[in-house]
Structures are given as structure tokens and as C-alpha cells.
Amino acid sequence: MLGWIAGKIYEALFTNVESDAKKTHILAKIFFTAMVLVCVSLGFHQSLLALALMIALMVFSRLTSTIIPSLIVSSIPALWLSASNAILLYYNGGVDYHVVLGVFVRTLTASMVILFFIAMLNPYELSRIVYKLGARKSSLIPVMVWRLMPLALRDVVEAYGIQKLKKQSLWKSIAISTASMLEKSDFILESNGLKLEAGLVEPLSYKYSWKHTIIYIVAALILAVFSLFY
Image (tube, rainbow, N blue to C red):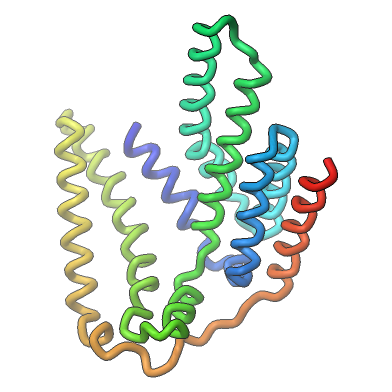
């Protein structure tokens, strides 16, 4: 189960890395994410609209392969919280299925937009932001972290699969994947030590997709209007 979940997280976050939608301006991404979370805080119908609009954006952005993995990963906390809520309601007089469904949808939407936001982050954009904030020597860190994260998740999946075939305990696969991840992180830091020490002379070149930026802003404004007048 752990390996399967790690695999779905990998699919949700690190597939379709070449999508032009990732070049959406980070402020538009933050604006859309914030409006989705506002809808979640307001209620069931607002959350349902936000979820539908988010899936529509993923389809438009050619991130369709991440939809099912994102829904699966987001369903884990949603099922947990909705089941916990159902148990509490049962012991306090009876289960209200509308309330339980509302908890599930709102948690699913909140979890999915967080995954979506992380998947949409571009390490080169983050590198430029860090550089412009004055941390020139740290501007390569976002790129290195994005290189290490998919490798770490893949190590977890592979180690778990190997230990499962050997019928070994779970903690051994965790220990092996952790050791592999630390070894690779040390290798990356060692091989890029001079680059980190010297820092970038100028920020990495990066071009925004203004088409996607405008579309994400419009989507966020739709959620804002719906939240105000519904």
C-alpha cells in the first residue's frame, strides 16, 4: 500500500513536467489556490464548483494524466476525515450523510488544490524569485530539490517493492529508501558544491505563458464572484 501511494504521489506531482501551464505566473497560481481554499471554507456547493473548475483547468493545461492520481491521493485524508465525522455523528445521535459528504468534498478539494499548486510550481521560476530576493547563492537550491524529490519517491516505490518480494518488514524498505535518498542528496550537493558556493552570475532565463496566466486569473475571479453572490 505504501509503495502504491508513493507511486500515485509521484504521478500527481512529477508527470507532464513540460506542460506550458507550468509557466503560469506564480502570483496567478497563488491567487487561484487561495480562491479555491476560500470556497472550501464557505461550504459544499462552493467546494464542488472549485473542484470542477480545477479539473477543467487540469484538462485544459494538458495535465490529464495527473487527475486520477491527484484524486486518489486527495481521497485519503478526505475519507479519513469524513469517516471520523460519521463516527462522531453516530455516537451523538445519528449520521447526517449530507454533512459527511460535505466534509469529504471540502477535504478532497483542499487536498487536491495543494497537490495541484505543488505540481504547477516551476523550479526555474522559483530560482529567479530567490535570486531577485538577494539570495544569489541559494538560487540553485529549488532546481536541485526538484531533481531530488522524484528520485526519492521512486526509491521509496522500488525499495518497498523489493522488500515486499523478499517478504521483509516495512521498516527495512523505509530505511533502505532513506539511505538511498541521503546518498543521492550528498552526491548532488558534492557535484554542485562549486556552483552553490559561487552562486549564479545572473538569474536563469525564464519566459511566462501569459495565455495560461490570464486563464488562471479568470478562473480565480469566477470563484471569487461565485463566493460573493452565491
